[in-house]
Length: 295
Image (cartoon, rainbow, N blue to C red):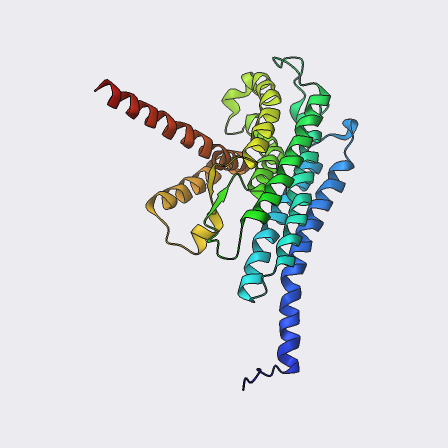
């Protein structure tokens, strides 16, 4: 004869409250993404000053914080479910797919004060091409999230990702307005990079071309099969290796030296280190195979 455990009303009420907490955190993620879109949508070509895009980018990082907290809250309260996983991906599609694509479109607008160097730029991206890159970014983010839902199960260790995670891809895009604003300040007289001020026109011209290419590459990396580390889980749960400690120290030093400019550097390093490492390893294997054949 089996005896079912009796749960008091207080205990049942507590479980319900805990079940609501991860859902609220996930919905806060979506609210941040929606707020980023609405703030960016208020910007017109005649009002570009950078502050609106910086506020929208900050909301993307806030959404990333909620995205980290909702999963941790669900696991701590033993409230993980398929509903929560699906809801998380739906909210991520807004905050890490649609909102960053919208920010990129506004940032790459020719009238933007931070990027207004079309006269010197080697070439100008057609507005339709910029729109296509934004659509591709959003589409790849949705595909990445759908693939994650299908391929991830409860037994997954969550130490590595297949393809660039959508929050990291969104971080690359969201860090650009913040980094560009800081670069503008450091190139001005009295700034850390004031010695490069005579070349600032050419620096911005290169960035006009580089920003769309970074966005395009980031979109492709999301649907790739490259292996990316789950940085949060590895740093919080696992033992930190000497390499990870050195990376943390380097990141702190970089933030101290160049401040907000470190954001795009660190996010781009995380996004593009995997394909660079894979290319290097493939080249080494081919070189070793050629050496064996020659011997």
